[in-house]
Length: 216
Image (cartoon, helix red, strand yellow):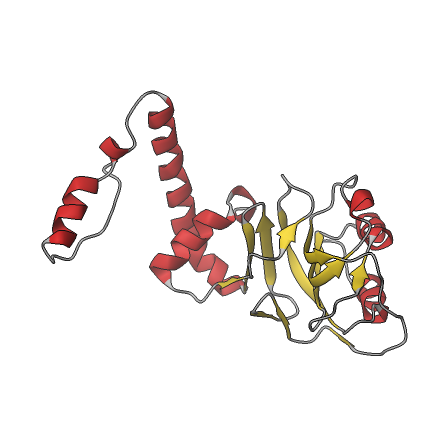
């Protein structure tokens, strides 16, 4: 519930301060449907140029899970419109594929978070047995079964319960502080007037340690 009230930027800002090793997925993996938040447990799939195990993952995943697929550099599409239809029917939290999908016109009509690296109209085969519910690499980070996957328009982050438990309090503070600053700027305050910009630059030029920070 508390994570659902946050976003990926404030979580990443908290990570910069606390260094919990929160995993940030390659930004090249982007949402097809904008304006949706995704939050759920990872149900993992590993395959290559073949989507038989994606079907297995869809069969086994539970409501609230995020199907996370490592295509291992596949060029062919391994997910499509039928899969997002099934994901919606089962109540999955979303789909992430480090690889290509197709049927994006259909996917855009559905209110399901769907993250992909690219699009290819040519689909893979259904002849190879690979693995599900194993440790995979998705977008340059390790994703283990049961990890929490959090996504929005700004990107995707992955972590375990302990990491998010440490990050949430500070992320909530950061979000509240940023909202206060945005409100002040919207009401006519200068953004530069809310920062220690001049002092920070002077310190850096003089070789003194310094940090840029808000004064509110």
